[in-house]
Length: 593
Image (cartoon, rainbow, N blue to C red; front, side, top):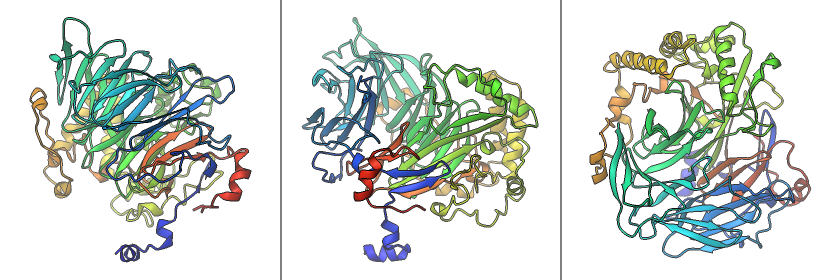
């Protein structure tokens, strides 16, 4: 049966060949086989029915210069290693800490980067039965267990993160759709907590814990319908992006508990979310096999990426490849305190970047060139890299490239070779190494005429506007225009995936939203496919045998992991170092495509 299937897909050896290196315009990325981390016996983990393998990093500022530490979960096991990256081969025989759990499995974890030292680290671990453990794998201590009796929530922990800038506050999301804010200094109590409503809005409610003495949880968030799959704090820590099984991205002001904006998947649940380094864009991935780029300022979808053949499990920006380039170097006046010098973006620079971009918008010249790099991995075992260029970020500008202009004018009949029947066979014109300026994306610039006119009219409202209120009005006017055309053509609405409408007790507290796909498609919540630019990946490579669950961009390398429990290190161009001489003798040569 398998052979028949492979033949039907034109498969054979080529289809299952796993890549060990790939090329982008920066150069060659190479898998370092000696830098692979896994369980000490290196036996592939039988992953049926287990929770996703996750990886967390922390730097403990070790005097030896090798301060990176790595934590990962495989099945019932949790490992803590010194991470040697591209410098030295991994020594799996000496984990700093190893734990095996009974009756429950670790599902996610997060280090507190503020408090980490060479002698002590604070690691939060969430579990499949709902508990959260605070451990110190260096001291080999277990300091506290939260939700121990499962009185707060009995469902699986889907995401746990320290609140940015805090040594004691952390946030936990569950598959129940609830999030809880904890303080490590407080106890959880011996009875089921009682809550009182603090704030309620469209599809969310926030409650405080009602008790005589302060106890955990400090806050309970009820968000959307179904599981809350992941959340991510903005780079400045002020906003929180949540993605849920109901297919919605919801972005909150974390301190004021206000809903900033929402977005709906094309169909199915959203599984992952991340912020751009400057906090201006959010990327999501999910069960529609797409990556979706959402503008935080405009509260709208600005692009979708098509390249995966199955669910997208992780999305992440690459801050080391993301860049803002200027023709006038004197304009660089932002502070670099919040990021290392080698990062192009800093938190304090976000505003100065915005002013430079608005200057670029108001003139015919092009003083600013913006390229955001992000990546995605999925259950199709593929790694995709994407570039988000100024063609997408500023579609209302006069389009200088002839090809782009042609694509816009002939949107109804796409140029030859730009069809997306096989998104995996693209990118040849993009991935030419040595190009300092990225060529235009093959399909990303194929803006339909209607989208150009809409964004154009919106930009006239947005020109010179700084207040967020103006962008809200602009979004409303765009929404009204879309609504008028909504009834005319929605032939594809009925092909939407199933959206869960199961109700539970907690949803009685929450204002119901219209989750009928036929009503959201064609609105700013969920534009039609032809209404937004369609990105194609720079590269799309099969890099594992099992579904991929981890994608992390580090300075010298990219880290990926699959459900078999193998954590792989991909050296960036020019960063292979001493390890290359060892690796070349033993590792497969791989294929550069």
